[in-house]
Image 1 (cartoon, one colour):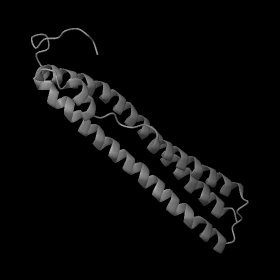
Image 2 (cartoon, rainbow, N blue to C red; image 1 turned 180 degrees about the horizontal axis):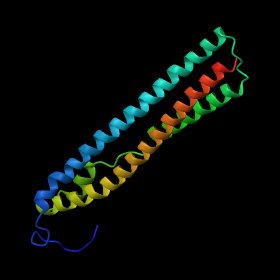
Image 3 (spheres, rainbow, N blue to C red; image 1 turned 135 degrees about the vertical axis):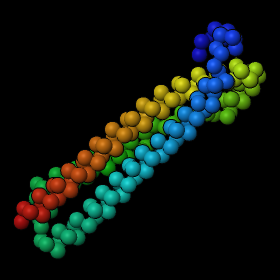
Image 4 (cartoon, rainbow, N blue to C red; image 1 turned 60 degrees about the vertical axis):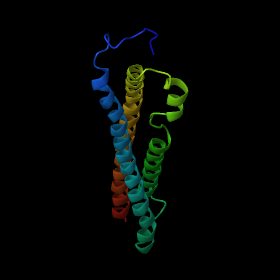
Length: 159
């Protein structure tokens, strides 16, 4: 953050912007949780369907040595990997009460709000990039799981 000495006269809208800056954290949490829920749903659905495939295949004497089965299994593993990477790598940047205690308790209220707005903006950019990346990874995982379903269908028709 810049070391320039700001005054309330220089930055007159701090009081108006502060509530919006703090609300940005709630928005990021909601978006992140919704996306994480989608990733969890994709994985649960893919695993459930994939566990049923060998049982069905055994009863219809499909060969597990088929290229279609191998490609479907590969697509499944790739989808699970992509979804797992999205869920495990990266975390939201949120307000840290310990940092506020250590660094900002001696600030004037207006200066505290100004600094909080700055960090909210920095964290917003990080959080937006993380959520967008996870959105792309969720789409890739969904495509891989759909590809798996198509390949299982091709395998079932390859009798």
